[in-house]
Length: 367
Image (cartoon, rainbow, N blue to C red):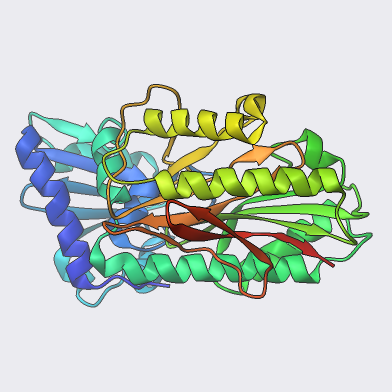
């Protein structure tokens, strides 16, 4: 699973130490999954529901300590953070699994005498900036993740059958993800009327008659891509098609508007305008619209008045919805334009012209 080179790890370490020097910080403990995965480029969990990683780092201005218990240490070193020479770049601190208190003692000892010690939780604003900047060396990893996510959800959409339960469809989507080395950390399925009433439809035993919505947030080595697809057996009702056209236009317009320098508050105001002009002004109130993504499915959601600004080389995932219809893809914001990462080959699309550019948005797969 490991893909990051020594240079990648060293570069991220240097980025963190640069901030430490600027802020006068003597040491930082890095223990959250999202930040450990960012630092190492590998998986840092055993239980996906845990916020904390199964290992940790203590980074000082001169040293980098890698802390893990004796269950995880060798696996992590050989399969997740084992870039050639990694063990020369860090000082290993392995503690026995049956003495969990030893982890805390190690952190105290390694930072003893230091005046300004901070955790990655306390430095969330710093780590948010660090982990959401797509560096050149990880561009290919993001494009691969996007392509595989689009493939997985597209294949699942083509394979589902009428009469399957939402649980079974979720299993099908999960299988398509796992076969591509992706962790389906969010797997939402709605059938028929549930699409009209549930914006976050955890799967149930309900069986599919004619209409299905599949939603996935797929993770690979910490990075997360999101996508939504719609499937209908037989021609969809005119109401569904009207809503789909409206959401596609909203989606294309917000993708086009996601440009460096604009604030998330401005983006939200744009969305309010887009919904109003589409004739569905109140729908924005029923679900969040997405926003900045990265090592969390949404690193920061667009809300009214938010001053956080879009930057080039960052990843966004918007998910506009009108009751019964939702669209979602993951994009890379570039200096010269945006790139959709999660397209699904062999999936129907509609083209929406915005500002002289034509954006291809997912259609409804009619089976």
